[in-house]
Length: 143
Image (cartoon, rainbow, N blue to C red):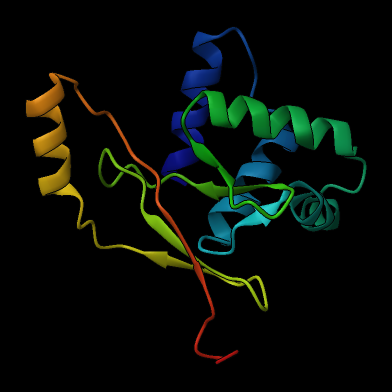
């Protein structure tokens, strides 16, 4: 997997190794794209292939992977941090629709804020690097 080679190289630059625990944690996120898993859910899945791993190791690994930009930490206002694999397809993160009934999360791939960003940058002389938008409502399954 090309992402593992990239991770191995980036860890080596920091004087770190690609441990089986780090590999397993990243693989869980890669194999569950679009799921927005929380730390405990990731831990439960990682334990299936790496039974000796501890929850603290998963927490530290997620923090490291987030700092390296390989994954993104999400706050969906549900009381826990969630994570997703970072595809690096563009500079902006996608947006999320959050159902207030069943708590499902739907990714919105379209970005309708380009014109708004341009206006803000021009008016306030402010270079926008990213934005995050969350829409709260009721999904079609709960309607």
